Length: 185
Image (cartoon, rainbow, N blue to C red):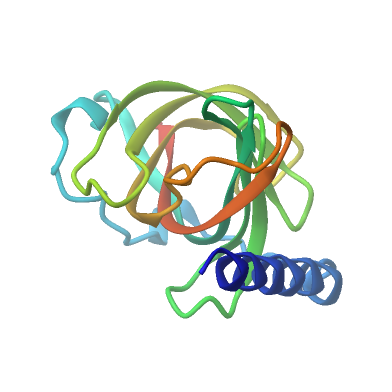
């Protein structure tokens, strides 16, 4: 079972890497914020609601892995590695998500955030989160982001079985939706 999981993760990582190579220079479709019609996620967890005065500016679908390292006793979280898409079919790549936590658009703009709160509506998946931006750089969709919500997660929990040696790395597949907010003008 473990070798099947490892092969699945290896294939997923390879596909993510290849999509980055093939689509890395794809242009980002920028959204006119006045025409953006996305609605915020449902209020399943009141503790991750974004403060008044912020509105949704962008919404992405993520597919990737949560990376864990075995310390001899437990699995330590290392960080995420995911590709971001503008559609639920995962066909229009708009960026990547990696440790920091950081979200970077294909045009180079990025936002780094820190965790504010979380909740776990699904015990089989990583928590839903509210994150606050700590830095923004570059132009594009992540410029001026104030808050980020991670919702509708699947998978990504730390492995249930121990590692075989200290330093073992395990990449656990996950999906999520991220809502990016900006201060209202």
